[in-house]
Length: 61
Length: 468
Image (cartoon, rainbow over all chains, first blue to last red; front, side, top):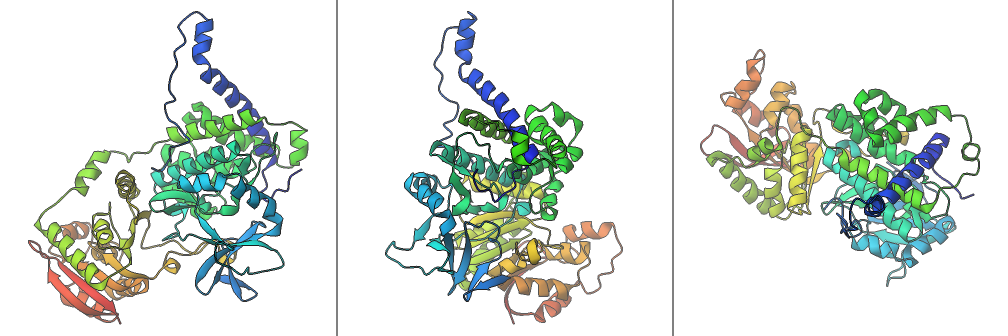
């Protein structure tokens, strides 16, 4: 177990496990949305650029 | 305001984290990194995370003992390294920020966490006080906020992020902008059960707020007496899931917006571009006088959206531009962002009740006045608000300004002016001393008048004064 100096809160730990599972799932679906649609026979796979490259963008800028 | 260790005053803002602390020696600010934090600090520097974050303007840079210099630690027994961090022009607090400033500080924190996770580290705290506006942009100033990421571990600072950022932002956006002031009462952020109770019902339909605030508050209550390890019962959180959590927080914060009721931002921008002969003359006088006294630090009090603050910046000063109106401050901050201005910090401040010293021992966060004095104070179209709307006698107004700084540029607006007439319309005129001779006499108790000039095309006067 790592040393913690902040009390993470038991409820806060549990709720993020729950949210993260949902969020992780929706991101996985989101990232592969075009593939999902393709599987459903709706559209061709289209390569889309990310709307924002978070890595290079500074939020305050 | 400081405690002492081996004659080196340790700053009272940095005592909670055992990883290290800030101290002053011979007027220079240092940060001691403790041995207990050696491994994490080494990883921060060696993984490239430090360089990457500093380059992106997300983390304050520092010089390390050994970079051609030797910094003595404050407490050699516990010290691993001694750093000299780059200085921030003015330390401000989240209850002094506009909506956009708090939102950008939140997004900066998440952006840092995302980059840290990519390089095997994680933020061990997410305090809004660790973010400061440096050269116009929100920047993490606590170099010791990182720890090595342990696969399977949830985000230890998640609760703090929700309390310091998400809850106040949601309350400001969905309930009332003035609820930012809750941060002044709750130094570790707005308690989530309080935020949940105050937020309107419709926020329960917002997936982000429903989970991160409402459900989160419920879970805290339910598991209040349960140990973390017991509540988890061995459950792990995969890294993808953790990144999903960060992304969910980011999208929830990004979607929060605030606009003053009944106004359009355009109206504020239009007022900002307002110009007439009197206004232009005032700008010239302020610019000339500030250049003459070579003021390096300026507080523009009652700055509205910062027109005269920008005149001050042009003369080479670092300027804090404060106003009581959160919308004016928001416009001011948007202008800073648009123009990438580096020397102007807009802040929300009520001069009749400026930020007090708060926190542990009343020493953790300085009062507004403790963060001065400055070279020059600007008080333009302000005195009538303090004297007439707030009943502050003129000598007390002068005394307050004299605490703020050495020089004062102040405008006297006579009773005959339409703006003062507006203030007097709703009340009895009990202000017999509010005349130009009365003004000069009151301010003369505290100041020597160096320059005075009638403002063209108006009945107003502008003064340059020096503290006695």
